Figure (tube, rainbow, N blue to C red):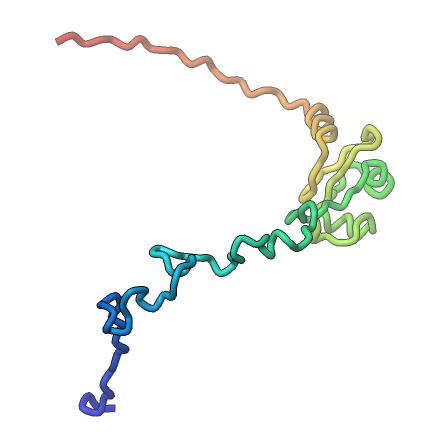
Amino acid sequence: MQLNNLKKITSRNSKRLGRGLGSGRGKTSGRGTKGQKSRSGHNIPRRFEGGQQPLIGRIPKLRGFKSRHKASQVVKISALEKNFRAGELVSPKTLTEKGLIESENTPVKILTDVKPSISFSFRGVKLNKALIENYLATKKAPKPAVAPVKKTPVKKVSQ
């Protein structure tokens, strides 16, 4: 395509409104007589139904909400004590191999129904609060010794 063969771009002339009665577009300027659409600055949303109860208000609502989080699969400590040995790793993969959960892709939460008699190592599972407290109590990790910070007096310099 060459520059001398380009088609001329034409635009539609806009209607000249409000130029007197003889122009054919004077007085009401093509807006009709009275009503909401004839007023200046009118901007009615497409969903507006003229004051009638809108469609969104007329249809029945589903109550509640649907959580975006997956529900956790629950495993109790008593089931772990039957299927695992002391110190063995408890993870979603090992739980599916032992048949305690259906899928390793959904979250797993370990709950205490009895006080645990043997210790486990957990990876990739959620623990309930009582189990975490029990786990921390058996660890008995000493608090790190922190040397007290000595405050050095700031000397004011006079000019």
